[in-house]
Length: 635
Image 1 (tube, rainbow, N blue to C red):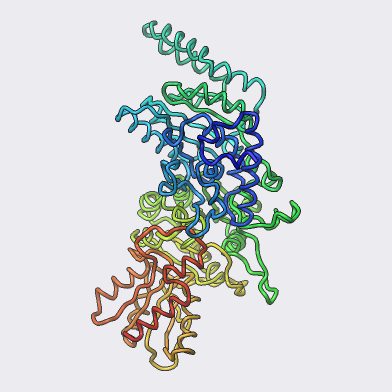
Image 2: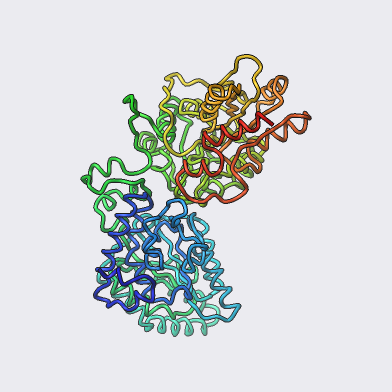
């Protein structure tokens, strides 16, 4: 095996070029075998194997710095940079991260996890290099839809005006733009990389600039005319030298091209065409399903694998009842509501499958809008829809909503518009780690005036909250976790909730000792804990589902404090500024002598690992909750 001899890029440089395709196949086999056991971002990384090999073959990493946008396509990069022997620990607690991580390797100069950041970071690296008088190369690899993000174009615009030497590799896997790759395109690129055309262009530019008045105008016409025949007009206009497109799976062409352009001056953009899921038939057939996938069996036929890939498949409980994910319940509920209300429309930022809007898009194509990786635009676009009488529902992952907080404040809440923000993956998401945990949303949402914030304890409460949200004439956020619900029955006639009204879900006989105020997916575990404490320790615990983080049901809190002097809050959010902080602020402003225990996540970035492991580590497992409440009861 070629891969046995390759641990670091220096080893890679000693491999004969004719052996590199074999190495690519071996790396793909390692990625497929590992991800089938650990889950992960399979299709993006399979499409970037040759690109990772070529980059580390040509450039002198880690001295030369490579930034992988989003980072979910960097598995081959990890294998080639000293992490091959630990790759089987991918996304496992205390194992390798699924994304580039600075503390993990010197070959990861910048940590990534959200899209469209690579060019900005690479430009910063390049400018710092030049200020310090250093001479290494800086490369940004961007693709898989990240070029639809506005931040990428902000960075391109800035880089084109600063003129620092840097290379941007656009990995086009048909998730952004797609050009045919053929002999002519490759031929043009070879000519361009020889420098002859660039030299000629410089001569022509000098000639036109000597012509006063009309020279600049004629130069712009000449450039535009030339760019009609070559791809990349946009990038050239922004100040980049554009090359490509070339075949991103042709190692010889990739290496030759990179060797020729690595010493080009100024910002350069190389456009490569790759196939997402390359080398694994199911992933090639449906790359979106294998973009991020749980563990799967390599023994099954392609069709069987495809039917279970992704995070939205149902499962069967022991009693034979099908349990839906929260995402599926949202999907079905929104379609049901939209059938009876033509004002309802759906907006997402390049995540129609992940957020469960695929069914809505099929049934109501005129009311479905995928705006690309543009969360800020998505929210402000929704505000415009709302102004003109629509009821927009913006669905995105909690962690990505962080990018549009200003738009939520300025364009939605300040104007008190009826926009519903649906936050999937609220709380801990497990193996994707700190860049994807949705543990800050209750905090950054709670500070915004006019905003109603709800979080359901189960699937039926989710559909009630969604129905309530689209009925209200004000901005609303509904936050729910990743994964399966509890299999509760979904009511057919969905009931609207009273805003700011909590519900006692576990009462006690007599006065009791403690009240637990829970929110979202921590309510049912709190009920189980209360039952366990009553049975094992004779500790009577009342549990209240607060439902609303904002407005808080202060009447319920007042009632509780008329009978109880010990209160516990529990949430899957950081403590700072979250639900428990809100309860504490209210109690502190009105009462004295109340003992309050806030159970939440600490003020730190939570590492990756299975959710059950993280719950145990950070005190949110049922056993840990029992232990904390038991101690609190005896205090």
